[in-house]
Length: 113
Picture 1 (cartoon, rainbow, N blue to C red):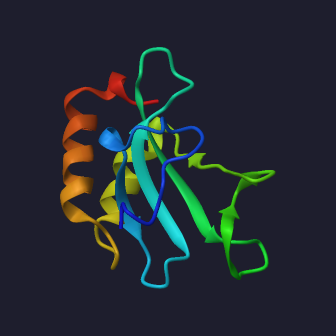
Picture 2: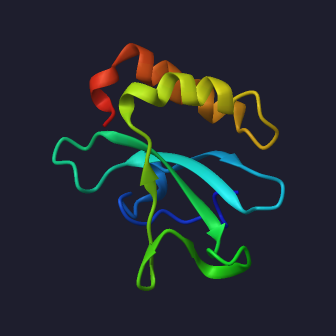
Picture 3: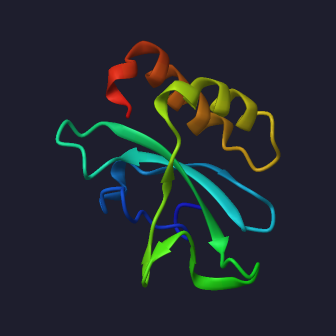
């Protein structure tokens, strides 16, 4: 999945820390974790985005976007543990990446925004 879904705002373009946590079977909705390039402390964000437009059709940009720039919506840190635990039970979950993210979150919450 990582080969098809690229990091974009607010993620750094370096794919080293960019991991897909979830992608539905129709490849319409995705959840990822990565370094937030707007954060000077290089903390991680868990974000969501749709791979379809607001019209429900697949397109090159998806939603949300700023012009032709793909963007992701951040999940607030206070919701992350519950969000990831629920996500982990869904078809399309990358359970290894979710487990690693949950372990990182539990061991050092300050590394996430």
